[in-house]
Length: 246
Image 1 (tube, rainbow, N blue to C red):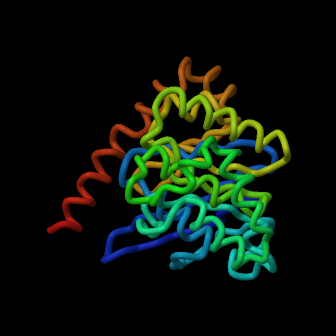
Image 2: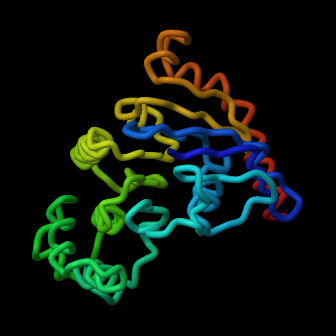
């Protein structure tokens, strides 16, 4: 369902993505793992049309995001839990999107229930939300259109252990319904527990891909495999960040 073919992206002379090839199959959770600065967020922004690749393409069901006839019914994305207006309530935020997409207003309450935000919390203004509550609201927003694909960037940030377990169960349920889930994170343990497939990226390059069970069987533990691959990539990403800052 999701496919990257030779995607390259450069910012200010620094190669952020280097000929990235990636696939995320339908009805499965694909974990997109890598250290901070590895290129994960840039890849997801390109996938949903918020950034443009220098070369190559990222497609959803064989189509670019901008060519989707009903994008909200195809792709639900959570890329930044801080992106919502802090002066609106959670329910207002969702209701406005329902009106924009032609969805019934009741869908706002349905997704609030789905992500575990109470009616009282839905009436609160976002400036009073914790990061965990914002993440839940972001997931609710992504689920409004009952999409076939979920693209999530660090959705577990701010969630306590109970919340992380809830998130894993939600994503497994979505995959069980046939939804394609692409989950970006640097939290190895949490992703390994929920993902059917893993893609490891470092310094803009895909370092390893495979079924989670296969990687675990081949390398003893996924953690050992991850750190063996990303040790050098992590240092390269840090050096790139220092050059950018300079």
